[in-house]
Amino acid sequence: MTKNKNLYGFNLSRRAALAAVAISAAAVFSFAAPAPSHAEDKSIKVGIMAGEEEDIWRVVASEAGKKGLKIETVIFNDYTQPNEALERGEIDANAFQHQPYLDNQIQQHGYHIVRVGYTGVWPIGLYTKKYKSVAEIPEGAVIGVPNDPSNEGRALWVLQSEGLIKLKEGAGILATVADVIDNPKKIEIKELDAGIVGRSIDDLDAGIVNTDWALKSGLSPAERIAQEPIADNPYRNFIAVKDDNKDAEWVKTLVSSYQNDTVKAEFEKVYKGTGLSAY
Image (cartoon, rainbow, N blue to C red; front, side, top):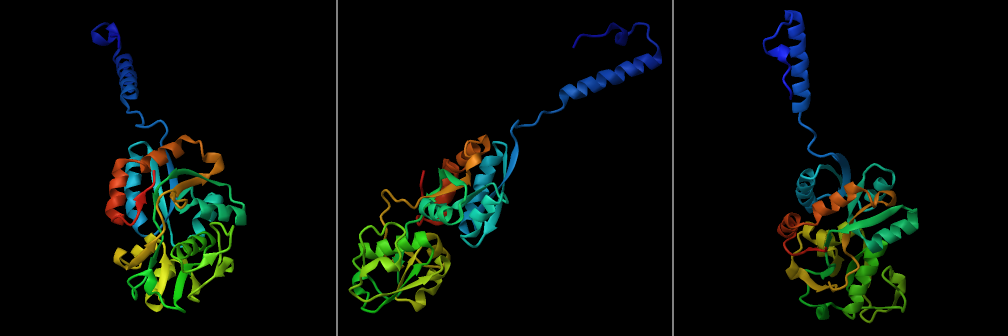
């Protein structure tokens, strides 16, 4: 800043000098005031399921905060709610579902929701506390499966891969019990809420349980006697947003805040190998 000679000892009235000093101080203050650390600071709400995901997203939020993105997590206990909340604009993103589930939701409700970045995959498995192998499952056994369309189809394909049932040709990933054309052991397939199957395992001969729900239900890998393949698995979970936000800068920041080594380490710590990073 260039010095004003009058401020450094030349003839100036006391009032004028004080005024000049005040103006100078204000100018210095305005130049010294710190600028915001991020020009694109933004706050968003992300819908997730209750439980282990809360631990994961605390780390994601910390990573996002370093990039100027503040994340508030909104906790859900019902799989049907996060997409409805996203569609209504009550949240900005969610992270809980795989593509077959979203496709079914869009077909049913007309949602305008798209995938923007993968998170993890939890291979679905056949659990039992009564038998050591699939071969031991007796005739007339009661096997629980999730009752939502995408996970029921997923469960039935596991049962078919283990030779317990046969599905009609073209049944697809949204197969239902109506698509079963052969059931040599006359198994009773009991449709239950995804979160109930694992907790009902004592009352069932076996159950197809999503890995995250198996963990919540206290089931161990030792009680899993069959599992879907991981290679080319269509059931990788992801972060989703409304389609008109898919190219927004904050979405890119959100995805990168999840897809990094810090979050991956937390994921492995929390899920102990029952879930796998999918990016």
